[in-house]
Amino acid sequence: MSVDIHLSGLPGTVLHDVIVPARAPWLHHVAAGQTLRIVDLEGNQAVDFLLYSAQDDAERYSAQDTVAAQGNLFLREGAVLRSNEGRAMMTITATSVDYHDTIGGACSCESNTLRYGHHTKAEHACVENFLEANLREGRGKRDIVSNINFFMNVPVEADGSLGIVDGISAPGLTVDLRAEMDVIVVASNCPQINNPCNGFNPTPVRMIVAA
Image (cartoon, rainbow, N blue to C red; front, side, top):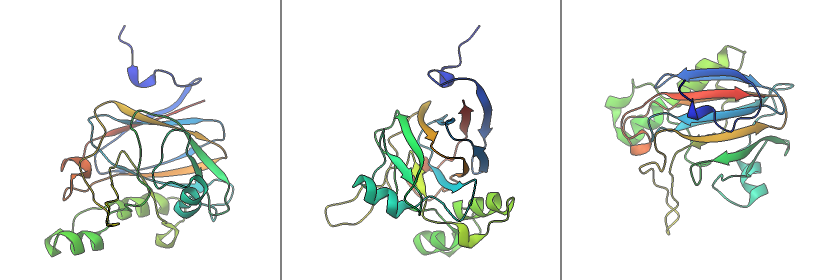
């Protein structure tokens, strides 16, 4: 019998296991104490990520609170994702990628047009994925805040400018997040094809929840 290496080291029983197609959104409720593992199946795929408190979705992931609390722009093992109330929402308990991005933001039809030209206006983007997923639970565009980009490489240059460059991920690499409260996870398996964050070729990812 073959061994599923993507399940190795997960605590407890697998409760949810799904392949999210290239370019698609994903939403799931993760209870306190459960672990979410994101698997970059084919490598160099960015996963845009938002969090909301399941008890009150007015409390949600805050890039500002997270960065200020840890004193670092990048998310590494042990980093705590904090809400706009300053509370711990999830903790990165393990990552096979050195760091993840907090400041690159989510692509949108508008930003694609600005960066890459008007011919990209109709291309699907992460903001639309976030909106599609959130609408299922009554949240709208105003509920989309600054997001995390797992597996995305956004270096800060010496002059303070940002770059979006080839990712540092590879096929089968993972990041594990333990929920510190009951949360709603909303993800966009990034559809961007105009910069290297997905190697110009969006690919599927795997989402596994265990307890």
